Image 1 (cartoon, rainbow, N blue to C red):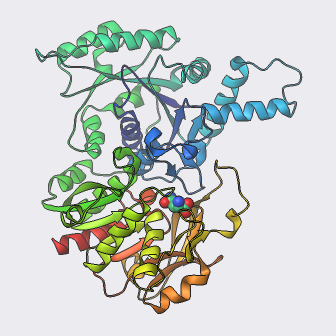
Image 2: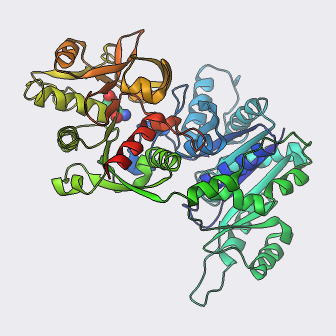
Image 3: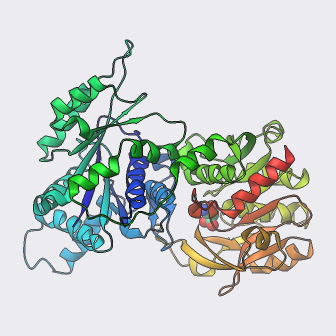
Length: 523
Ligand code: GLN
């Protein structure tokens, strides 16, 4: 078993997910198969039932698992498709333990946190380990949090069994005071906290505004029980995709390989310097308005932001995201941008504002991309303003609407539990010949990820089509409408699925690439 554990110290929000993803990527570039795993201390079984304002976006995988947004970083940096096994929560562990207890599997024992809960955690890690050269575990939160204590204890036990096949990397915050001095005391304390839990970190990475000074490294080495070579810098960077190169410059992969005694592997080469060059050469500028209702927290739309960035780089353009709160938006907001994007969402708040944004985009030839709820409101807007079906709506917002153009998917009608019960994960979609979708995907059949309960109501498809709307992508098995477009418009396209979950720096999502391209043409 080869396992790298990343813990966080002092503060949350240090970019532990991006750092973990970058560590994974530099090891992948050295030829190792790395599987990341995120541990979250909350009692929810998965984040699917949480409001995005609580925890940021819910990231959906091919297998339909609703996971922490850090899995998005892992997939984007490592260019892999993960499964739900890559996210463990307190809720999911306890659920299994309690179910086993009810089935009588503990044979009369008193079921305890140690060993039963810790064993369940470690069984999952062991099972996972068989699929990779290295398991890369990120422990959510900060060392000292009560939520992740059981996980740290489980990892301590597992590391005792596995000697130097286990490596602990501690990412900690190094504040800079007015005099400009980098202070190590908070890091010293957080390492002490880790030591009290039985873990000596092997490598300490200091998050700071600037690279760590030699003096700072010396102090950390002295007080935290590591050598100077084991202290690395993770300074503020212009772009998160610069981090793998920064860590490569400090030969973090070499250090890990040596410490863990990893066998040499044929390297897989990706030129991070080329990518950095490409990002630096994005000279064009484009403004994309995102009309949502969680715009106060950009993490709620993290994958959309990243997808726009990927698509921008592909088009040699820097994309500026302009956040537009759907309930408060005015014409002036729409006029400021080169394209509009209406993302997914739940519930009725903000729906009318989104419909207005779609109308503006459609009538004024503004490039438009709708995603999930954004697709549904595009159908509503078309029904109301082109087909003349006044008061058309989704039954999610208005169950009494005379024209329920968007309605619950048949199989959803008898589902009452909220957790993990939507139409989730990857489904194939067949694209219509000669459509915009067919052209931008340059394919006939695609696979994209979903997260929804409502769909286009079949009773209204023919009236929408007669009035010019084209459904250019269909899930054939159930005849669900997956993509719509308005011919004659420079770029008006929407998808019931979430293309943002598949966008990678190495493979930007076609629907986003097309949006940025159309926006550039307009500005
Ligand atoms: N609320 C809508 C549905 O469940 C849209 C979901 C979404 O945008 N992810 O169908």
